[in-house]
Length: 347
Image (cartoon, rainbow, N blue to C red; front, side, top):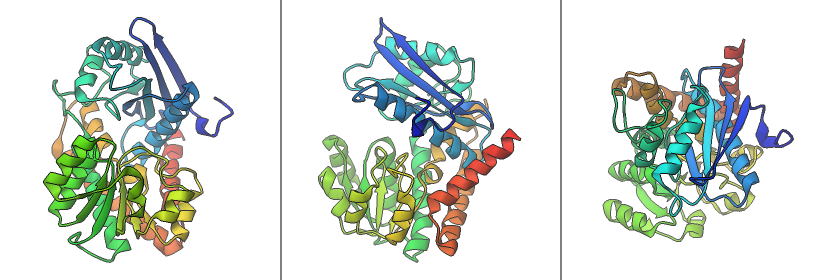
């Protein structure tokens, strides 16, 4: 673990196993410089333990930068549960994960992520108070996905203003990859704004529902990269912008809610050289963690959440403007800004 690029100077990495429930979980804590580590828990059927570890490390590091760039009093952490979310879920498994979270004594706050629903999280909440995204409680705010989607939508608008020189998304062609928790809400906002949507997902039921609601055209998962569009919006899993997919894209901008969209660090420069404006993922998708931060504070405030989302959108605009002015990758500029805030907190 220490020799991998994904380790990235993590403060601590914790592994949990519970034979009775089948729990195999990793909680990675990248930084607590700005506050307790916060980040959702993902349940995924990884090919092996190394893949689970790498995902936990990369996601945890990303949360440090996401929380820093959103100016939140939170560090970066992430939980992953190795298992099939369609066949291996149980209340007992999530209670066991809750006990794992609680054993860290508040160093890490969890919430829902890919493969885990607010209903699953409530079982985690039976065993620990260090959990957000609950439907019940004094500061409960429920599923953060709608706020994540709102931030992504506003980020797409900000990106379109710069890449397409337009103040309106009416008639703008957008290829959306993934219509799950976040993607479906994003499509709703985009359709209301008049965008023309092409969508894909591995879940046919979700595709049919979103297509019916928005008039979107459905394509096969691999065909989304070949769609004639103005903006590509990835809202599923990460590492999907690589040499092969970038060569196929016919867009002026990439702006979506997926984490870790760039397969490798050098892809930021390659995207820039291809003439594509990239909205850094950990900036544009920060709405959900802003929502979680308000809940963690103990006094949930929607006006505060909305204000922070607006501020984050303005920060994204500044990053994109600087990237254009300095002919540098937007991902590099965003990372510099986040790391500077964490470094200042350490001092």
